[in-house]
Amino acid sequence: MLESINQIFTVIHVFYSKIFFFDALFFIEDVSLPFILLVLFFLGVFLTFKMNFVNFRLFYHAVLMTAGVLDKGRKKISGDISHFKALTTALSATVGLGNIAGVAIAVSTGGPGAVFWMIFMGFLSMSVKFTECSLAVMFREQRKDGSFMGGPMKYLKEGLAQKNWPRLGIFLSTFFAVLCIGGSFGGGIAFQVNQSVNAISISVPILQDFKWIYALTLMFLVGLVIIGGVKRISEVSSRIVPFMFFVYLAMALYVLIVNYNQIPSAFALIFKEAFSTSAAYGGFIGTLVVGLQRAAFSNEAGLGSSPIVHSAAKVSHPIEEGVVALLEPFLDTVVICTTTALVIIVTNSYNNPEFAELVINKKGAALTSQALSEVSNVFPYILSFSVFLFAFSTIISWSYYGERCFSFLFGEKYDLIYKFLVLTVIFLGTFASSTVILDFCDSLILSMSLPNAIGILFLSGKVKKSLKDYISKLKKSP
Image 1 (cartoon, rainbow, N blue to C red):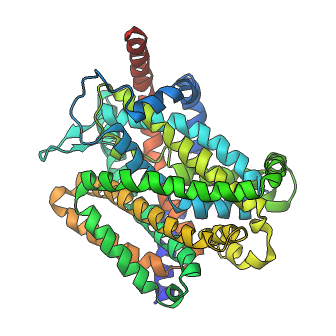
Image 2: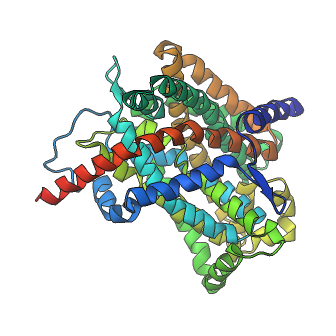
Image 3: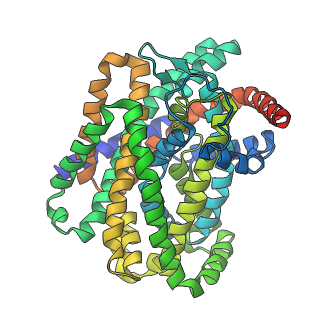
């Protein structure tokens, strides 16, 4: 059965990456440079300059907005959830096993230098996230049941229609919805459950032989939450995300404090290898690609996923939600991913011969668990609990993304079919090979950025105009 499951994931990966998305634009030093990754990188650079470095200018304002400090006296328009709940729900999708497993894989395959490019991409991603989430609120619609629907499937269709490209808008919005459903099954579900069961089975050995116990447990809990829609998902996420964020961060920081004398040399190694032309880790290009790819996978900026939930936020101006959203890549990539990378580096786990099997088979979460065990035998158990929460929260949020796109394509009455498919993928992802799952998830997740990037580029002028209006009103306000 395992071989059949792996073949299913492999066939889908080949279909996506080879036929549709040109797995590699070209090869340098035997390292493939994915076309989609290049698109996301230049999109980040373009929007950072076009929005006049909004990622830095409005950072503090974003913190105040998210905390609710600026809500007093503001008249809200209709919406389903608060800024904070929108942010935590989106973070529950981005802050997942990509931060634990993906980063460990990046350091072990791309070397410490990959961390530099991961952080660099994280800052660029803030501008992308700002733009796409602002568009999501601009073009959202209120459904018959009172809920809001927005995201690339809406702003691609309506935004491009306003520019007299209605057919292109319809094609790209439909294309995105199909890809988002696939992405939810890939990085949103299969990767999370696969990496989490590998990590947890180290602390709970019985799961190594009885993975079906984990699969059924997760299926049951996810089923209970996703039936309730965005409000229940946001309620669960607003409680889980802050808790798991601080638990994991506290544990990782303890490891760094214990190894404080290694931190300066770790940063020196990161900067040195970021620009190294050495053949190790594939040289400069290999290190660059791995770092950018992990950042793109982790914070999801440009993919169009987060705008779906941010479109449901209560706002008085569309730019408000874009400002709140730019915090996501910072918290996800710059804070959590960097912390994880430092833990892997200061404990030398990525280079430890005892963990070679984990590196070869790309069991990143298990590698992080072993790194933590170098400091305390208790930490792998705490990580197992954190990993479960990371995986659970990511799955329920991505299930919402996929469901919204499924509803966009087929209508609300068929949502149960999608939810059944979610539970099926949870089961299959539990048993698949980690190497197969990683390739499968990268191709499905990153492919979403193609139609979304086109829409963002064409509509970025509208966001810039709205940003100027927003800043003008801020200056006039007391």
